[in-house]
Length: 195
Image (cartoon, rainbow, N blue to C red):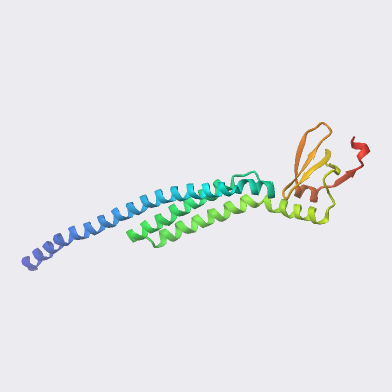
């Protein structure tokens, strides 16, 4: 072993180390800046989308058309905000060179969570919607009909895509999901019996 040769290897390693560390530090700073820009941009765009959807009155339109009382405006704007966060985090990880298996696992987990959330949110909506379409198409139940479903007896006040609104003799308002009206035995009563 040549001591001069070993010394030159050590000297070269020491000279390369600051350059290597400065490259990693620069990548880390750029990644942090990308994440911060993503957080700000996601929040701003989320608020702008919510404001635009509120101007269009999307919640009122959906509530009127389908009878859904969920704030769709807020759901859409929140989704867009978190989607932008996700995109900028991916960009930051790419800057750091970590876009391999970790990124694929994160994106796969996010997609699975989104799919499960969507399926759980529409599991009751879809059967009621199809039953509502069936009721509207066959017209076997109309507003003003007197119905008895299980122990509930009353006058049909309103039928929408998701549920049927029934008023009882006592003046109570009951909402029956349309899927129950297609599954249960529905008896149409004569008006004299209800009055």
